[in-house]
Length: 267
Image (tube, one colour):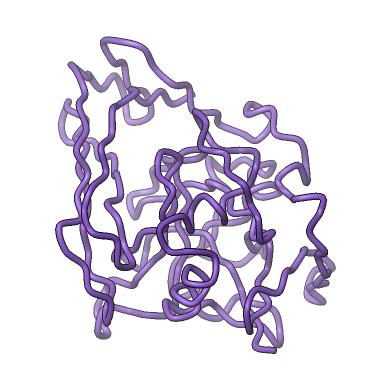
């Protein structure tokens, strides 16, 4: 299993569509943590940052980190996490059901505002998509991780990949300053990161697959592609939730990374 050192986070800054996002990168024999503050297009963003303290971290291999103090064990599979199927859904929410005719898989959906959202991450097998840690059980719970190009075309017929404006509208409906708290599932997040899921969105922390093939972030972070690219370049915009914060953030990521997908339907 991968072990990530615990860290103290103080996320500050005026909230106007984004907050800091914590990233983990291995550089030589040092694990570097840093906060990302990235503009969200038409939204005004200032002073978003992440401050955290860590101590004496040594990399033992590409997948194992040995911190000097207490650690949080990141599970390799959903079974390791003790996460039963369907436990992320909220009982008092009236969900509908989408059946993907391509493979017969069923997904819960929920209407929020003028859009119907998938209430779980997509799990349709395509090239350039992965289960976290190459464990099939993770796809069953967290869905697959897709490159941006695949994400743009992977949604079932009649559905589409969500845009940043879709997310902004969603966040405004549920309350921008507490959007993460109200959209995250009641189970599945690390260290008290579980939330109220008042609208049945049931966001789960599926982690990511970096362009080099390393998986990280399951139970800590959820990252979802949007249709918005970086002016035709190699980067596209994402939305993100963090176990330690009640907001939804935004950033840019390489289109070759693997992130989760939420499809929407116009009603």
